Image 1: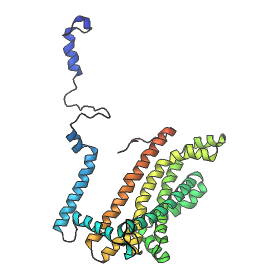
Image 2: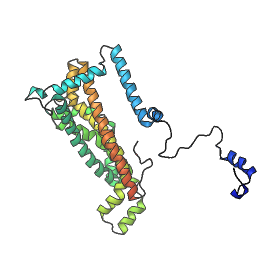
Image 3: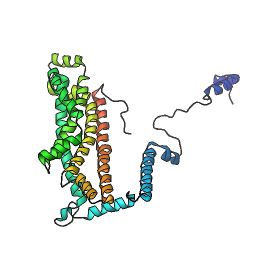
Image 4: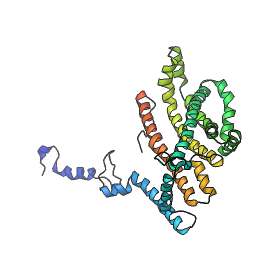
Length: 313
């Protein structure tokens, strides 16, 4: 019960209570970090549940296609074949070990080629992209070359590389570089020209060393563009390696998929397709996404460069 000493007359209390109630049909606003829904509801309707639902849906459709079609292996047959690849000695040479088997050795060979190619892509992309944004003569010289590189499809480079370099290490690395450098250069170039000219002029007027400028001005400005471009380069570069190994090589995951394709073994082809897909998903979500979150956090600490939505999904 209330009294006049509470500061609110009794006849005013019903009006205040009615005003405190949210209007009918309005949505409740849930504070960040708070969720009063039951655990089972949060599990089935949360963000993670959406991911697992999509994965389970794809697996279900895969199982249905394998049941109805004779040329589509079921998930059980596919993973059983992956186990067989794990148990096969690499090229039937030496004794079997955790490393010396068809599964691990071919995956490591493909990763080695992709890593070397992408390292070269990263170095060239940063240097050329920044140079195009800083000096107009370099921009005029390289613009048409970058457009040509973007226009030519990767399979053309793959065929040329196999004819030029034959089997071995150089062909896939070459295709990764020529196919992925133009895209990364364009991304870094866009980030470079986004740096305010006033800040550059001020740095030059006060004699700020280039290393300090690059660390505190250039790198925070281009890092978002760089990460987006490099993420696409990783996806495209991995596909380039698979393409070259498919067309002309005797090692790697792409070669192994082609081997079972020529043998008309659909279990083997599907197994290596799943392996190739799983590797790129693990690299993208497990490494690149975490790196992006860390870089965005660092940009926020530098000041003025933090991206919206700077949080892990």
